[in-house]
Image (cartoon, rainbow over all chains, first blue to last red):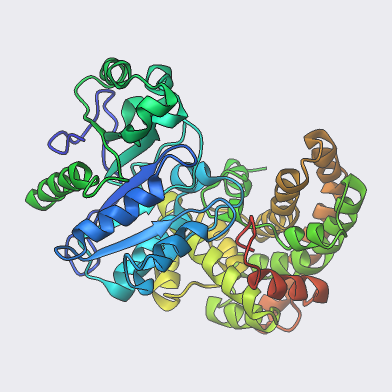
Length: 228
Length: 224
């Protein structure tokens, strides 16, 4: 996202969430991860935690659809201590909780800041949803949209707010491309057409250090966040 | 009728209610609510118990009754620990939205005095007051909310015909007015005496039990 521009191309403010805590300290950078069911959002969050936890103070908020499955996955794999992971329940409407009524998620983020802070980075994972789900600018500072090659190589062409407007598009499971007949070149071309200058990363989280490009992008966001 | 009331009572007002079922998720699982008729019975019961109690607290808050005393009165009227926690959490979420809409030192003071959240019905009444609404309007908003949220949740849980559900709500509308009237009169009496005891204390023990059971569920669609 273009943090140096306070408004977007329509003149609307880019970041509406207050950026300072009551003590005057800058709050943690908040990054949202959205995308369809099964594309690898939780795996991305887990891999990011493992890659970044030694250098950053991290916390995670999950928005499961009807269980605490995602939070439990993160706990079971011990990517972070349990007190750094909070699950928000969304009443059958995961997109409402990250976009239209963000109050429960804001509460969760603020409680994490208060209980285990100071934090450098909070990752907010949306419940798996459809291609129109995006995070409110009042909740996150940047958002990653995670799709995968097995969901069909037409997804970038179909576009939608997540594919075309997210700050980072991740195309996961590239290792499966030959098996499902997905053409990565077509996906890259379509993503470019939808996204213009916004970045797209192709990765396979199943491979060792497959998350490295995403972790690098997150570090860049954090450097920009801290520079302002 | 006031524009601010419509805004405050709108189901899309971003105050966290969309993730709560008001006990209907347990009632559906128990087979007690299964169609439009049983939903109507559930909502009628909810309106005349927790709805009436919430409306009284909201009206008293809007009428200038001391919020701390009202918050204690709300605790006394909420025996279930799970429902207390839910009410305070929703109160905090509502306060966030209300302060954005109607900046008011009273709302700031409430947030400072109750960092863990004041009861939702008390916040609703103070939000209504900050919006320039009358106690009767605060009571009506509380009564409306006591049935509207669970009805929406039921549409999602059972896939009921939305026209049947909205017709149930329409048939309940006159009863909402009656409940809001009773709550407003009781609130005026409480304010006159400077004592919370005249406020309605109608309870629904089954909803209390449902809430406790629900909070222990592993798999659920709604937060309460």
